[in-house]
Length: 152
Image (cartoon, rainbow, N blue to C red; front, side, top):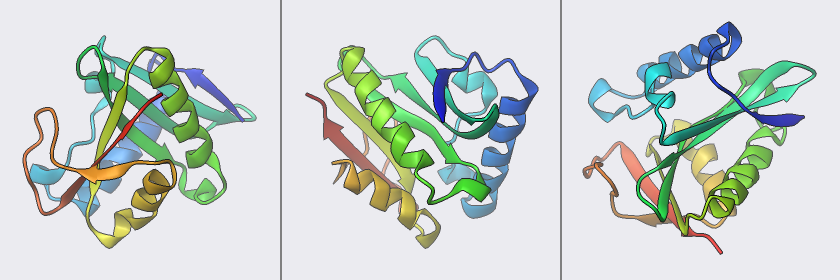
């Protein structure tokens, strides 16, 4: 598997992300869905990576700079056929290392509170994220949980 910075210009990543948005819409009401569409991921404050295995996209994730020291994990996704195969762990470790390399000292995220998101919350906990209050522009929402960790 290779993790590469993706400029989001190819049809394969567009389709992969569209599937992500559809899945989030199916599990989360619109007012609680915070997944970024393609245009939101193309912003200068976002760095996006794809995970490829033999040329096929099997995962993706991004870091969005919130300020000089705080960044947010966005668009973490693993292909359905590759869930629980180590893709997400490999990618999250990469995102944490890249955020530290970029000079961030805090990395936060928002994910769902429903059972559907339990594997994601477990992964984040395994990587040292702890539950926190809403950050950035987020507001309290019973369908969201917020997590953060400091970077060394």
